[in-house]
Image 1 (cartoon, rainbow, N blue to C red):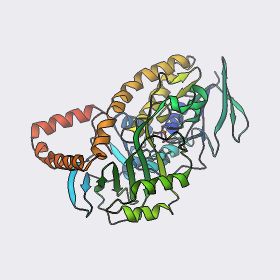
Image 2 (image 1 turned 60 degrees about the vertical axis):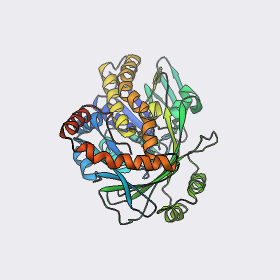
Image 3 (image 1 turned 30 degrees about the vertical axis):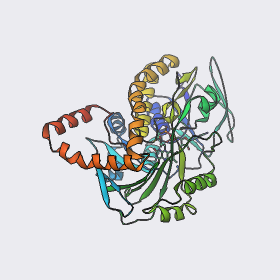
Image 4 (image 1 turned 90 degrees about the vertical axis):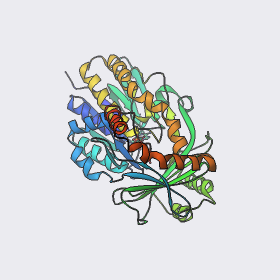
Length: 391
Ligand SMILES: Cc1cc2nc3c(=O)[nH]c(=O)nc-3n(C[C@H](O)[C@H](O)[C@H](O)COP(=O)(O)OP(=O)(O)OC[C@H]3O[C@@H](n4cnc5c(N)ncnc54)[C@H](O)[C@@H]3O)c2cc1C
């Protein structure tokens, strides 16, 4: 039988993982990526639980560990940089925290020999019939595929073309996020520093040799937001942080020059179904959890589940899509529910709630001194992908 041709839109985290597994299962994957190459911005992300299993089977755990950060705690600091609270952040078991760009690069390297990659292009139109999907691209000539998978992130074009406008599925969570690289500010490689003003947070992460700043602030959604308009992103970011203390004034000065700014709404994606006919969604396109969740872990785990489902019944893609969705929603749903707690913890809305949060985290070591509680927590964390300190 001719191997089935699958078009994957997006070479972020989910896309290359799926391409790798589909090729291993005898499919012919093509990945189309809008950017000219892999994009470098983005904060450290986690590979945990089910994603670790997928990475082990791909043989990439040594590379992931080598790129892993060495962060062990999140320190809350005041205007003068004094520590006023902390949360331990040791990764559990085999989990790894690494810069998003490194994870994307390692996954791409694993998949590049297995799949065709088209960079600097994008799906323009999709028309499916009983036998396949006719695809036109912005640049490449039209082609026909057996299946199309949208792994093109929060603002998925595949989703828009197949399910309708994103306003129906994307829910802004009242927070905006920006990340950018920063020169070494003499950061301790074990510590993430986080400074709060009411409704605003700024974090400095040492990364792995390449430090990064993250801005998270509360603000309403904006129908007119264009996720590709960097000049507008810079204006929004500077306006949101005017008057903030700590390192913020010097960070804002750098925003104007930085050419590697990631800025987006913190949003969740919720759809009643993840596939229509021969087109299915994966990763953030299907079920974005938000900044604080386990987006990369879920993207990798979902890709491996989808590939296994398709491999089990290659002639019945609809059955495979249903099984993938049923299984993967079990991981996604608790993550989507946990997001509001993380927002309250990291971006308190008043001076009182900042002080209360800091005081609570100072009590944390007392609790961790009780051995039975620690053991019980460790057991729960080892077995449940839901237990984690949010970023
Ligand atoms: C540059 C970048 C930086 C990020 N930084 C952060 C961060 O700091 N913090 C955080 O929590 N999350 C960040 N994310 C999101 C995070 O990577 C995802 O939540 C998670 O990894 C899920 O992976 P995904 O593969 O589903 O989506 P993503 O990792 O977002 O990958 C989607 C891919 O699809 C591509 N794409 C988009 N539109 C099209 C199109 N029309 N045609 C073809 N390709 C398209 C994108 O360029 C991207 O490569 C970032 C994403 C990107 C793209």
